[in-house]
Image (cartoon, rainbow, N blue to C red; front, top):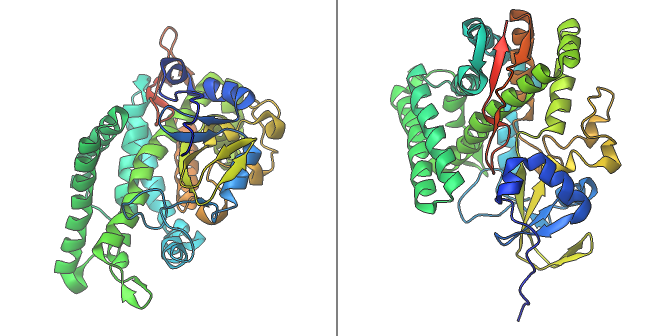
Length: 383
């Protein structure tokens, strides 16, 4: 009989939630592999996270009974689905999408009030919503339902209410299925967009099922709506709090993409990803049995002092291969090219369309709650 594992920490405890980044920094030095109160293992150090990401045979991405294309698959099943996925994020596809991305960014920056704003609602969340609908070819009428759905999904996840989480998942799948039905009904008159193109994709000589398309699009969209909004807030706050960095980007817009990667290394927009052990394994002296859930903490690994020195030092000369912002290995983030494009273009428009971004005296931002990151409320002053 397996001995019960000692509980090392609670990632949802009040001290951790008050400042997740500081808590992970402390855990990385004190207990680099920690068994949590929720029955999983949290891995904090860069080297240990890299080991996990590079060994998909021992640390499987199949962590749920629900279909997840391609994120929740391992090779060889993962390989053909990932090939389909990656066709939508090529350099050519990103170049074709950039004009639409720029038009949306310019419009939203121009509409941003001058003076005090709440940046999450006034820009970050709206941008993520607009940009994902544009990328998929969805109608403007879907933006408000998606905004409300994102709120319900966040509330259900935060409360860990399984029934509510299941209900919002079914609701979201319904939005995607409706868009597929619209395009099938239109036949040759269907719009030439990414949603229509997915209907023509095949795997192993057969068309993708609706369940597979829905899962693929769910992975694209849920990550986009939450993580891109978090990223915009994190970057905007960093620039407001560090006017020297802000001025550097205003003087040299060509450095914006490297700067966004560096800012998001310091403050991760995505806290963690899950893996499952396929055999007993030892990490940092901790013996982890087969079938255990393992959380790779991006928000800690990308601040490991043994790799980055002072984790809060902003530098543009770091080795990009060490930055795990978008993961690595066979499961490296499929949408990384799109995320980089969106953040670069929005930041180019933001610095071009404003003269200064500042924090607001006496109004500290509110941190997002685990498993989210960034800010739930972000007052800034825009001029």
